[in-house]
Amino acid sequence: MAILVPIKGIVGHRDLEVHCAGEESLQIYSGTATFEFTVKGSVKKEEVVCFLPTRNGALRSFNKVQAGYLNATVIAAMDSVQALDKGAVLAVDTAGVELQNIADPVTGTTSRVLALRAHIAAHAGGVKRLAYHVTIHANGVSEEKLFPAGPALTPNAAGGDPIM
Image (cartoon, rainbow, N blue to C red; front, side, top):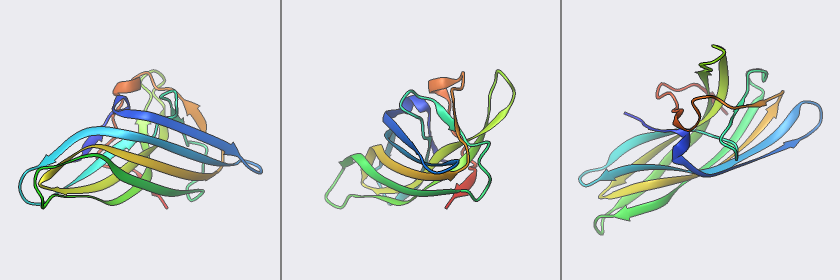
């Protein structure tokens, strides 16, 4: 079962968007996902999923960006850890970003927004924070959109379309 981090569980979120030629843009997102994951016995693996909010807590809609016109680089690292004994192991195995469909409860329309998906592992330890830095190259128009659910909005565990 995935750890689904709501927007209110993302702290220190920042973003930067630089417009290039035509409809191209370079977007940078950083922040820290907060959650609880503690393992006392053998190695346990889990998946952490969170949206990538802008500095004001909004989500950018990528409805107008054609498939295949997004590229991403992702860095994710344990930010707050606790070792329960000398043999503790805490790791980020993989991290990537995807587009997830979410419904706007007011208009009934669906938007495609960015979500981080990281696979973590622990043995005899715990993780409370996962820091991320994501850079997106978009060849198309994205728009910032605030969703009424705001801070309680939680990503979908099933996933979306991966961005390579």
